[in-house]
Image 1 (cartoon, rainbow, N blue to C red):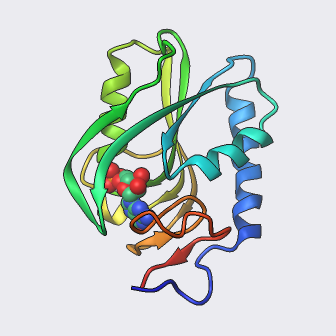
Image 2: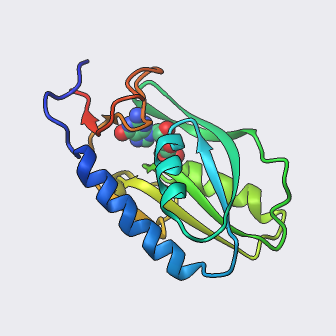
Length: 171
Ligand code: 5GP
């Protein structure tokens, strides 16, 4: 496996889109002080850039879920690290790197619902709707992509390539 020579999504395009998403979130969450619940590890670059483009005051929390090994999605998702802060009555925006089958987002939402947040939305840098298995559509999407396995901008292949500043396809 190797990464494509040219990026699928260039750095400048990612940054421009993050700026637009931040403007939309600022508008939708004005005065609500939402929680940005960042899915580790893949969403950390996206979340860091998005958070710093927001004018709205947010609380940053992290959650870790495991569902994937290599390039095949596993059938189950486990929450391996949950936020210590309470999500009760909070407006939660779940930040994901990519929504693929949708199982991770669905499992995290189910986990969060036990705490009765005021609202839950999903914001994903990438959306791969062709592979959706669970009934889960992100509320905010950076880019919709075809059924590629992508790396970079936080997304890895066996722990590697997260540091790439653009999105590349594994071929
Ligand atoms: P889902 O539960 O929606 O199938 O998958 C979500 C997780 O699978 C993502 O957070 C990500 O870690 C991993 N994943 C899905 N598609 C890709 C991909 O194209 N590239 C990488 N690096 N990870 C992916």
